[in-house]
Image: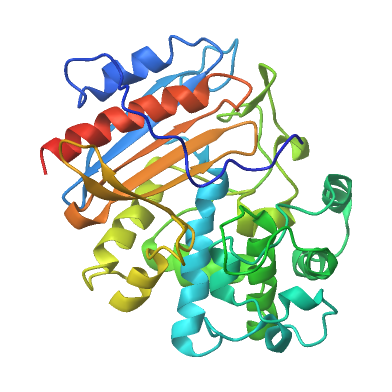
Length: 364
């Protein structure tokens, strides 16, 4: 496990795919799949709050003849963080949790480094708590066969993470941390006496009509790849307890789009999950950073028609997914591939996404 998830802020560039019509998503996919280390890639375009285009090309696994389809489920890695943050926001709206309560009061029985005592949920979800990215990777792997409940494992992980020395002062620069999302989930589980999985189904997936696939991958399904080899079974993902930061979440692009569309509609008071001000808070950069809650914020791109974008990248090393949304004109792009960062997938997805987003920005 070299690193668990791609950071929220992918590198923006001005060099776009060399196509005369950026909206030709099939052409963009064909160009991306010139890299034969990428088995399959899918893209979905949202315009004016509705799905405008979808396309998929490639195969479910290298050396397979089974074609990937629009009905296949894609692993989106850390792009799940925005969903976790939205669930936390729902609990805040109900008064179960608070954005400003200190960790010392939310986890009163957890011994923690003194520098974490005044950290808040907003700090955790914007990567400004000072927490390291993860705890020891061998310890994470040991949880794969742990017989205890996922909730119990998260509680132990939280205790370990909060005992470690911070990598930075709280509420300063953003330092990407998967641990922050595990701690936030453990707080929600303690406050509600429900598992993270139940909370997500009740508060996010169910209300939006999303179907989440989290069982071990079978050989006939769309598979992620490691060093060019398709992965199935229990070793095909990070241990399930890590779900709040981005493991085990696979879904069709259509279901991912339901969440994306709701996030944008929510800013105008038309969301299905939260009040308008809660969506706006989730999408507001914290401090002097580009880090919001579950999102990275990019402003002023492209120069010819600048827009405000919510962005994120996700990978468990065997898949790669990107999302960019422009809430001010209800449009965006979702891209996913069943290849990891040991290929050229990150650059291919970035170029595809930027091409379509530039096209949408010019037409807004």
